[in-house]
Length: 403
Image (cartoon, rainbow, N blue to C red; front, side, top):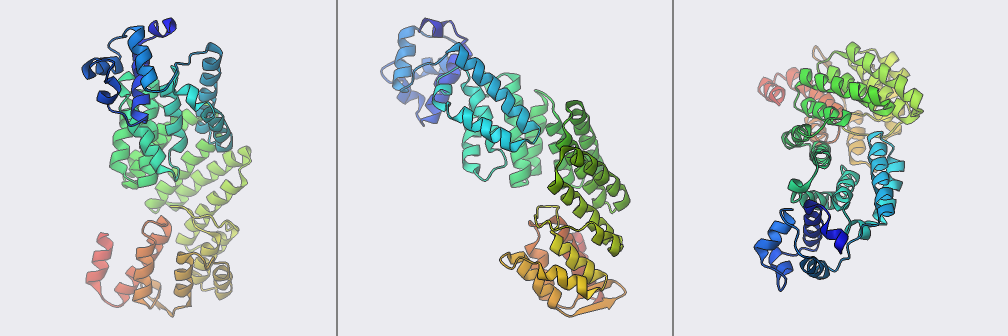
């Protein structure tokens, strides 16, 4: 244990505190029969290093043995650096494999000087995944340890929490707070990218573009092709929000060049669908059809190929293309089921544009797509608006515009 007493007081405090917290043990329970709670508190804060006898008793109460094999620590530090690098480059298969290797040594890491680093890696791994319980638990543990962290560790703590809030809960205010807190301790392309996404969600388009441009500078320096394309994608979508479709096209086309270099064919299809949607908005339906693929992935901003075909046919009054798109709908998907009903309804043409003459289905789709797909939601808002305008129901039209 002599090596332990020569170690940094903060490291000792972090090992004891994190193990206690992970076992849901209070300071009073751990200190019982060993020392007073106030003394344990000072140990956990890294203010003092107690005697070997007290350290031994605390470790025994926590059912752990301190592990500081130099070869092990060097190997794990290298793995953790590689994990963060792969994650930064969107190499999720590689980062997943590396994390599993790190996790296989969890018991030793929990009893080593790398315990905080281990939890930071765990936080990064579970960020934006479906396992929000593990993510939240890990964040709660790390938050208790912030005073014992390095600036590098603090940066990743607030960065990944901010990313998770921005993507999973869509809570822009909470994400902003965490991301700007991370900025106090460091910078990265992902930090500015996600700040840009927050501004994008809040419709502050000038600030969004400024953040994406900062992200690009980091990504270019790294040679991070996928992230460069991602920044161009968000810049294109930001211009789309202001209906500047031609400006948006240039960013999607730049992004496609980087995706081609990276061999990401499926991602190219996503960008092509963005281009198709822009051409649809410009009523250039033949050009839009050129960019439609078999991609049936849907996200906040990405439209399925079958939807695009159906909309091109609907708006371009080409029943053959519309039917082809509708026939490709996935009828196990509730949204696709509603869309099929929409395309079977009677449509009308007015000076406001083409719309479907069924208020109930229009309201249903407008409501159902709110958190499902931004572009789909906007589309049905515009169709519902046409309906109200043509029916001279101006109160409902103004209320819809306010939303």
